Image (cartoon, rainbow, N blue to C red):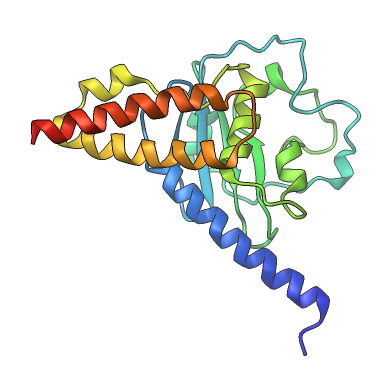
Length: 220
């Protein structure tokens, strides 16, 4: 017989594997106006948000009342890429992780720490205290919800998943067609699962992507 604790461990492991698949999917997409992403290994998704509009005196990402003793250290992964991410000036860099050792997602801020979080005397490499990551173990939280929360706290975008259609127009026809299809599928998933205020703006971009897809069929 499998005890309840073992069932919970197995359940979290399965959910984490699904989460990492979401990371892989988002990590292959381009064309968002407010951010870009790429995978770093199997358990890490780098999210770069731009531009910076957060006030240096505002600490929405890590309130000072958070108990740092409950936080977890970032595993040893200092590399030349980490140093490059830390020196990023135009984009705010986050590391979204699904480490098997923690059995749940965590998010670390990798740049602009002095602008976006309160100084922490205990461990400078603590994960951010986000609503979505805190609730992941008890709710069906999706990767796009974590990304949306990060962006809303960083640049307050009306639509965190706004598409940069100028970027799509500049791509070669076949590449643009494939990316258009992938972005459409992603936004449709967000639209179906979301009840956030920005969902109407997501729908507007869905209709534009659908129109571009239909137009591309006639060009074949």
